[in-house]
Image (cartoon, rainbow, N blue to C red; front, side, top):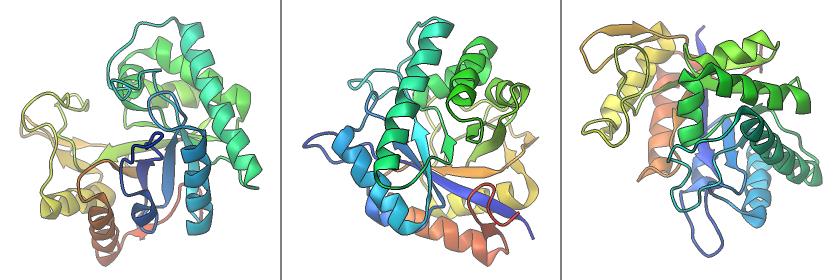
Length: 255
């Protein structure tokens, strides 16, 4: 039977500002990517989100991004490989400490936003992220865009990987995501989202913007936690996958 992980970016509230529907979303996902305080989140939010994940039995992941609260980590920044490596290590370490305080441990790492997209195409940045992960904990799973440089970099240092696909984002013919700023880059029709997710899980295929059918390794599907109606969408995605005979499990569980 086909299986897939369902992940969401969570813990992105900050101080007095609440973003997302983390408690409700957590009931339906299997992996939580928790912001580590630089692109979003703060120490209190991090700990609260870890507690939610522990209660829900969801895999806990660090979600490191560029230090850009104003731009929500979605703006590209120029950094050296050493700076990226240290930046990622710092954020993983912070969340690992919070998790330890809750008698939990990290399961995976998934870079955020611009850092994720840059590492998908720039092998030097991908290598820096992979080094940071393996130096802290070589048992962690590194999530990255299916077919990207980040997956290659992780595998080259012996890390376990999870190739990530997106039901709510339009793909280019080369397997890259259409930039968010372009019209039609984000899909918000729930019915279409579920149909795309099922196809990705069952066949590993998706139709690109050009009309071509792409074949992608699909270990985990991302749901954006800041999407309007994210909790309802998470419920629909999970029920749709399970109704299609797909087992929804965290990466590495039940194998």
